[in-house]
Length: 197
Image (tube, rainbow, N blue to C red):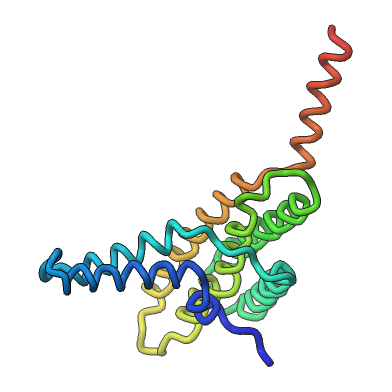
């Protein structure tokens, strides 16, 4: 049996369940007469607040391996589609994928150390969303566009979409600690204290 896709995983998630409770509460406020015609906005806001504030569920065992496989599939797809993509796009995607692979490596090290794992599941989920949903959607939109559409506009849209993803990747690379580098810096400071001058 195939694994559920990202949409089905989200629909079954705790975030969606809490968001739905908030949306129902928004409808109940309307029925109770506490909010008027703006109740759909209130329901949507309560859904969003519930979904955003609910902590991410720990990924299932093996999810990191699935994300790595999706990352390599994205890399292969870009390689196969290189001639059809605008100039500079394959290199930009490769930089993103390299950054995401680095984040996955750092998360693996954190999982095996006493490092801060509080945000690791959330960050793993973001990497998974990028490589299995967002990046494929950008490529699909560009590569499957009808012949009548403007190639120049489609290329500009693709570049803008990839810029948004690249900023998210840069944030992840910056946020996920490099345990090895941190340990090396700590050792350097310890040696300076131990052997002053």
